[in-house]
Length: 424
Image (cartoon, rainbow, N blue to C red; front, top):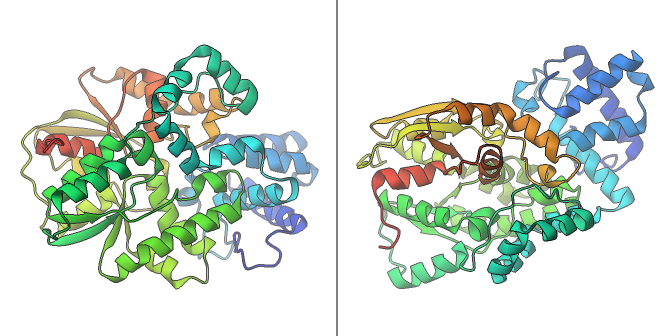
């Protein structure tokens, strides 16, 4: 197995380089992903230049790692993934390489800071007005680029003084704890919803309650993906352990876990059992976790989703996030949106190029914009009255940067179609 924390050779750099050679050799022979991302482009170009994989240097190997932004699109595309005997898992190979390098050299300061999503969010919310202003000022962005290496043109999410968590505590107190619904879910609301898009969190609660689903919100931390991006495995494991412990008791009581962000649902479903291989609770949480649109389509199949939509939503340009595609669940958000009468959905299956912390870095920002250009062109060519939609809030940021058009989450479009009033 490419990513096995119990393997004594996991942290051995020589063993890692041997595994990288094995997988790079298979990829070179296949080349199905030749134009998928900068990592493969660089790898194949280097091999062609030297005409021999053996001539690639250790620096070349880690350049491939550096260029990987963990979109995971190569995994569903690859014909050699488990249970094939090649056991090829390129995304987890990249995560392992980042972890081995970080253990040997230390996690870079920038990655340490960017990995602290909860701390940044708490500070951002406490000083929302000041930080939002600083993120818009050219002088502060120049300083941020020089000190932290975050590109001065990278648009950053806004912070809100009232987080979703704070709002929900007040909302629950006001409405009491009496169970009213026929189903019940735990909402893993995510850092971005909590600190940057609390309105989305409110819409989620309202849509779920409209469908007779009770919502509980236990204590939770960042899913841990920003830590993995920087190679900080131990911090990612601590986040996973905390969240599993917080969620599992509800799962054992019959709750499902719903998640509005593709990266976070991917983490709970697919990475937590790998990070915590001996934890049966992690497997249980994984088995009962759903992307929120996936969950709503599940209850639709059961005949329990309300379709009393009042407002048609017209033309929607829907961007399918990479980390939803990697979950192999089909096109649940598109299918959900198409239930709204008078609504036409056009789907874009391209990577936006944002991919977490990668596109924030000054050396990758321009490259990230090139990756996202096909989406920008499609959006710019669409009718000006079309709504822009993506489940990924960071992809929304990227599309807004490339087009000037702000997007919505599918649940916000559903919220508008139901004509729900968040003030009630």
